[in-house]
Amino acid sequence: MVKGNEQVKHNELVLKTCLLAGKIMMQSGAETYRVEDTISRMALACDYPDTHSYSTPTGIIVSLEGENPTRLVRINTRSTDLEKVARVNQISRQLTSGDITISDAFQRLKSLEKENLSFPIFVQILAAAIASASFLIMFKGTWLDFFPAFFIGGFGFTSFYFIDHFTKVKFFAEFMASFIIGLLSFFIVQFEIGHEIDKIIIGSVMPLVPGLLITNAVRDLMVGHFVSGLSKGAEALLTAFAIGAGVAIVFAFTM
Image (cartoon, rainbow, N blue to C red; front, side, top):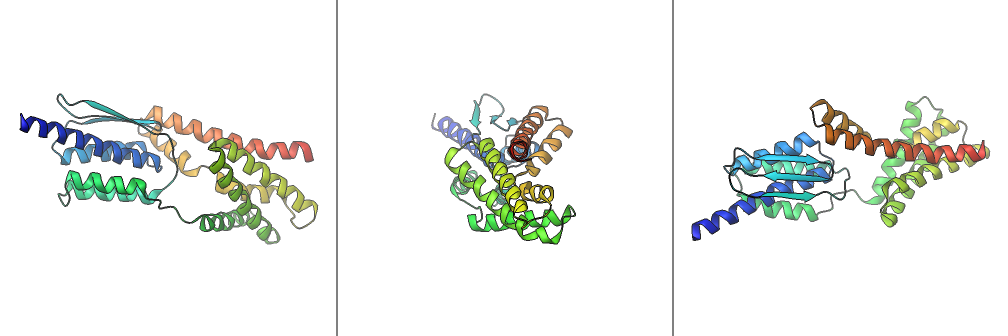
């Protein structure tokens, strides 16, 4: 009886560990096939060779073999944090090689889930500003618009960050950020500080473009994860629509 209870607790721990690993990876922007592969490898390391998992951008279902129950975890938020994806993979490899136990893996994943590995906000804003100015040059913009794109891109990303933080509505934040970028670009050209409004706007909105999301959507579709691929594609399409609509409204009322 005691042995049976211990087995049930062990099964529950394996299930919770696999679900937590998949949840952190999916929330951090990992591909669907990578999430399912990590779950299978961790379960196999615990002597469950016939484990099944089904992952989507909004939820993960894991079932161990035999009479063990199936568990579901919901994914409410998604961002890009490749450092967390790498750390989950590292924990998975350590569990697979026998360097740590399933209890150690669970505790490390719980600690990792609470950690904030993002760069400070001022570093993110500076990176967005540099990326905006660099994209302007890459799109054959003039060097005279380098600093206008630098400041507008940085201000646009700052707007997106704080609007998203307070409203918790990502698409609205992207719409308002692109609207602000379009408006600032219009005025900066009107006052002859900038010269090519189209190049300034294109460079400044690039930090908002969901490049990783589009890449993962195509990758998921190519390997047959149609539900995840279409979901991520729809999310990327809505983001692109929000960015385009914000800029279009500025052009509609000023041009």
